[in-house]
Image (cartoon, rainbow, N blue to C red):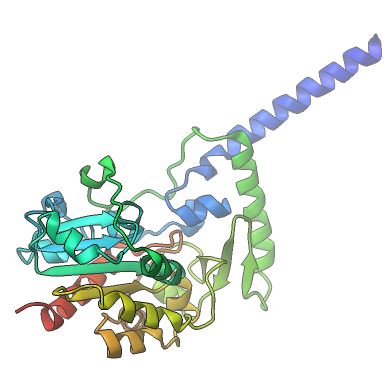
Length: 334
């Protein structure tokens, strides 16, 4: 009986200590970026600190398909309607649809689109690099449009944050998450002290990498290092993508599309010598977003892609929008 009582007290003290420790570190697990959340690293170390441009919500209004001058079909880089504000400020009415809803540029896309009442001048087709081969393959294989409406498509979008407090935590998460985050910080401190530190493959497909001149390019506390998706490939994009674009263009009778391919964050900072964008620009007048990102990095644009996220900052999105708009002016209907 005495031993059982001692064991019960031990368990109680252990649980109490675990709870106190977890509660103490829980504010570390308040994540603003998807990469810090996936890797379990605190925003105090990897959250951006330089304010971003402010955007007025009125420029993010979603047009109906019938009134739109521009139809954008894209992924998460277009869903927030941030880069599109460059177009709306020029007086263009923009409607943004997702690939999930449209399912692809199917064989009957052009007549289907006109039957829906679209009489606009421009079609923008956007895809992030890591998905573009699959997105194009799915479109080539698709013969008949099966539109899947999503109520979120027409829901309001709100301007991205101009700034946030990287030290402001809350106590809403799991106690274990705070402890894991603290353990990751300790491991990072140990690894990064090595003069040979170059990268660290973390959990949940996150890679930390040391970036040349990182403190000229990022505003977070540990600016020499940034977070990336580990699945992003260093290899050149499969040339079959160019063949698929040609196949899809042949379906778009009377429509001149603007193909937009967003470089992976890893490509922009770690593997910037890929040639796909040069060839896509030469053959299809696709805006060269890799050249845009390389130029921005050479010009020391801070937080083009924030360290804690896979997506552009507001600064990056506005550069993206300007590049797309210039291409549309050069190649679209006059």
